[in-house]
Amino acid sequence: MSAPTKHNRLDNIEVQLTPKQWAIRLVDEIRKHPSESHFDRAVARGTTREAPFINPTYNLAEQAERCYPGNKPPSVNARIQLERKLRTEFRALKLLIWKANGNISRNAEINGLKAALKLLTLQILIKQDAFGRTATKAATFIEEYKTSDDEERERYVILNELADYADMSLAERSSHGLPQTASRTQFSSLIECWVQEFIRLIVDVFAQKGAVHAVQHEQFDGHPMLFREVEAALDETIKTMEDTVLIFNEYLKATPSLSRAEWDQGNGDGIAFAIPESGEGYRTIDSQAGQRLTAGCSVSIGERWVGEA
Image 1 (tube, helix red, strand yellow):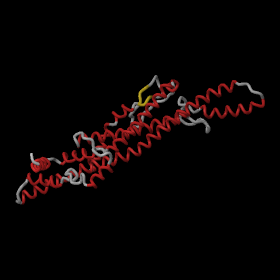
Image 2 (cartoon, rainbow, N blue to C red):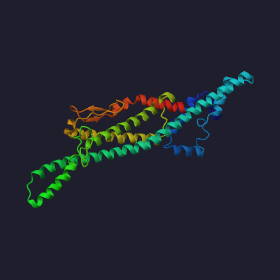
Image 3 (cartoon, helix red, strand yellow):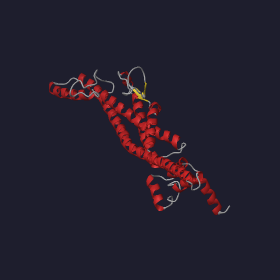
Image 4 (cartoon, rainbow, N blue to C red):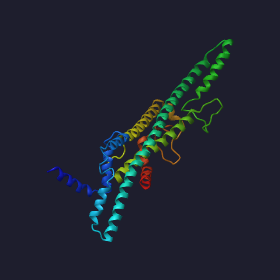
């Protein structure tokens, strides 16, 4: 088959493509580049500028021409309306692609920093908890230690200092979750706040990810629509959260006394992402349950993107 013949056959096929099919070709091209900047540079160099999927105006106009040929007013009006409809549909899908990428990119950057901060905070809280337990044991030993009158004042000062740190324990809380004295730190209140904020972060990230999957399924026949760098940033945020969940759950398992604390975890909307360990007390975080329960939020986010586009 000669080159002109192949070119003509390709033109005939492209003229029949729907706006959705053109949009799918666009996302497939996007996925070939490592980032949006690489894609833009390819367009600027001209390697993709002439590709119809960037702006298939001519093909869509030709499609309308074939559906309503002739110069009679009814045909002309119908052709103009169809061409406008096809071009609008493609522009909307194209805007949807960029809107989704922009939202996920911004949220991945913000949530990535939040996830890293939550991981760091958890590591600090765990070290504080461990030190509080050590301080409690040390205070017990020092209380039993007999000193001379000259050393008694120093022993008293040490016990008072240790008392402040001894209260920093995950397994202890006051009935109202408030410090019992100005110097005492209710460590359980800190970890409760941490868990609640971390669960909200899980909801946000998985809802965004679910929205991407929902839009891809409904609008692009399952073809991935995120730039590869945007997808990588989202995956990195999720990995940081999963590492944090693993550290938190493993620490609870390694500290049996925590399960005896009177604590129940959930969020204000009644969505729990935790499962009981042993009896009443602290719960391990179940991120997979969180991912499943954010389906409704994901659909709403995806529908908003589509509506705005």
